[in-house]
Image (cartoon, rainbow, N blue to C red):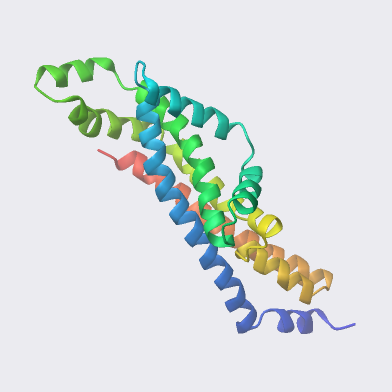
Length: 219
């Protein structure tokens, strides 16, 4: 049986670290694209659902309720198998579909929390409904629910680990799982788990801290 130092020297090579880094890049790529698209679409759906009535409100509500109440894992299966997308596009689309619905509800809560008196005051100054939404309501709504939005972003990054088990996409967790098949000693497996856990923690903790700073300094 090899010693602990020998096991670590076999595992912690530049090639293996580069292998994990390639998975991390894919994780961040999928997460970033999904988060950007979900924020845009989620904001639009939140505004549409907040209308008093009309077909667009119905469609937005229908989408949000259907998607939000079905697990993201199932959406990954559906989009990959039914629409026959490649692994990376399937990952981006499935996370965008699910996260859009989640963010729409979060942002809608923020919209409802803005004082209606501010809207009336802006309207009396000649602001159009579009200007009121863009310059007055939406910035305040986003600020009010920023912690919940960032929490959803963190969930996206963590949940990319589903992609390897569902569609064999070699993101960070997928790469680490492959390494575990090559290095099977208990110490090596736990070291790989520790490295991956540390990477996820550093990324998500940094995002959370930035969110807190932004909440305090957002004028």
